[in-house]
Length: 171
Image 1 (cartoon, rainbow, N blue to C red):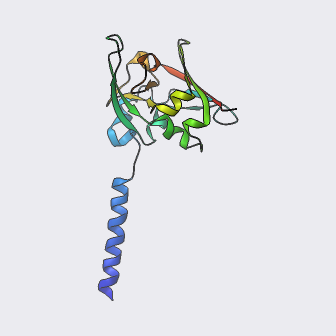
Image 2: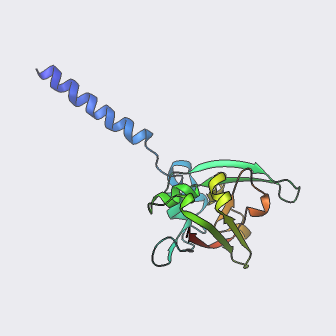
Image 3: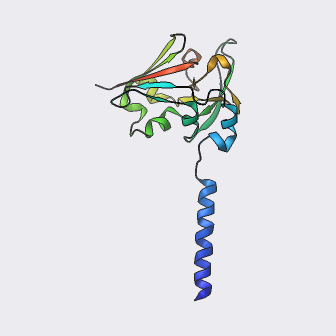
């Protein structure tokens, strides 16, 4: 009987350890991004239209979500190849019980006023990465605090220096 009890305890402990290793921990500390984004980790990105009131989120909070890493090349030499690390827009929205297809559009606004509007067709078609880092390195200073990477979409939509995100629900 003691052997069975010990075996059960051992199996329980092993299951807990395996879960701790395999459960997603976000991209922050797991990949070393906490150190990479330290200079702008607390920068504020305003989000409107997702909840009843506007709120802010920071790159460090985004890095705590399940993240992906991806690279994509633009169609022009100027666009170049962009490496991104961060959560997808879908992952971000899941925290609020929403999906990309709940919205007619999502608008991303940069610090210089440049805007990119993703309409429902893009929201339904593409994986949109909210990049808080350039691979395992910080975003270049001109691209902080947030950059979009949308593999397969026009590189003109890969806006950077995003400081505001606005959502408009379907009517």
